[in-house]
Length: 364
Ligand code: APR
Ligand code: ZN
Ligand code: ZN
Image (cartoon, rainbow, N blue to C red; front, side, top):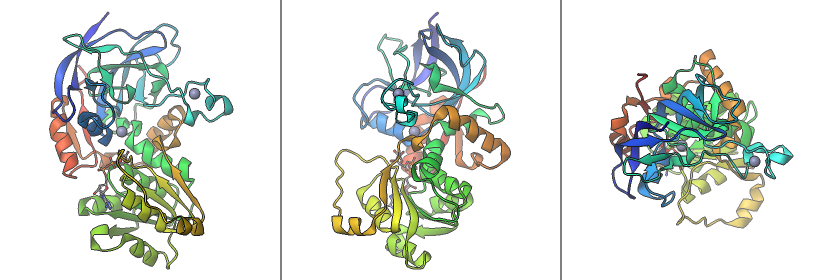
């Protein structure tokens, strides 16, 4: 039976998104219907709204969600009705050329549900990153809904679905940060803060946070940064060298998505160091790279999508780390808002006031 929900719809590029009535069809084969309990407001939702991800308007925004499975489609054996889940925007297919050789985190045919949601006037919605969590309900592929412990509540758990996983995964999987190593993080927003936290969990000896905003640097320290560099005060590469005995760091992370900070992250490395690009660049950006200097430093430049994670393995693990007190998600939630307050949340994000605003949907 088709149900009626409420969701945040971006109709046209650059215009405010509004809450609308949404018609939601039942889940098809291999799909599940999830009642959303909480959803983080991520930078990528803003990119969707501005039209910089694609032009498949109208979009149903939101892709960082947690909730309860309410119905399952034909052939679904897991998750079950009533399961508490975090939604993943990638779900390995199990059959493609990457899955076939044991590298499912690189899956080239990640699973999504068929379009099951439309506006009251009958227009099919494109859910952000194939999820659409700024909504009372959403339909996803069964493997996108990953059961986790209820001891990690929805407002915190939802963050694992995108920003936290991306940052922690970049440290643990893309870079494989070793204990005792030195780390620099460029950009300490929602993603960079999780990189810092990942480096702390990986027992890095020195974690240097670089940002241009004092509030972000203060949060960075609370997440485990050992040294703070305000890039407005001078060349951050020189500051990092000074903090590392002139050598540079073993691992640098770019969590902004700009060519100038990527270059800084490359030059902040020690010999044979690893630089990881996490920030998403826009199509106009170019890198002017002195190749001899790049070659001379050795090491690696790696790109990290979604922290090279495997949601079915990693979501329950991170939820458990939260329960044990090893992963701080409470501090990442700057504001808890209602579904009707996503526009002010985007504005606060643009002003740099928040790590994350989280939409909390009532349980009734
Ligand atoms: N040097 C240092 N820090 C900078 C600079 C700069 N030149 N320019 C911006 N920053 C800082 C901002 O002050 C902010 O704290 O980078 C941080 C970016 O954080 P957010 O805007 O909160 O973005 P976030 O959600 O963390 O995402 C970062 O990762 O997933 C991608 O699309 C996302 O590209 C984005 C990036
Ligand atoms: Zn996101
Ligand atoms: Zn695959």
